[in-house]
Image 1: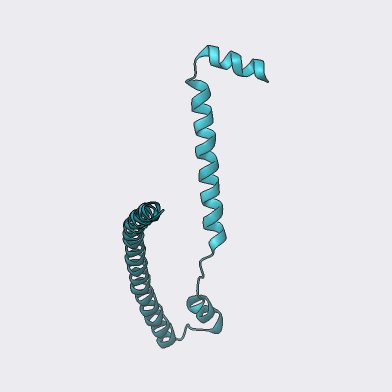
Image 2: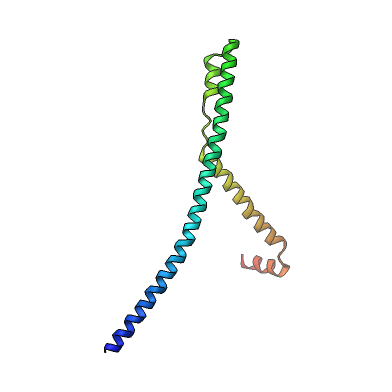
Length: 126
């Protein structure tokens, strides 16, 4: 009985060691993916921030010039300073349209390039 318990203990220790090894490998992969995502987010943030600053500067310069010329009124000021907030939905709809077109293209190509026997079998099943 003691030998059986010793064998089970060894088997459980080996199983635990293998599970820990697999966990370490998986966590390393997730760490790499997380690092790539973090670097991409930082780059995107930096690019957006840099381009936003340039836009603000040019808008401020335009406002100063219009004010010096006496052409600045409230309507023009609102138009120039109004932020153009980007929306999530137009981007999503564009992607869905592209996805739909890609699926339709794949279906059409598979019908065009399939053999006539496959087409006849498809018509019989309908």
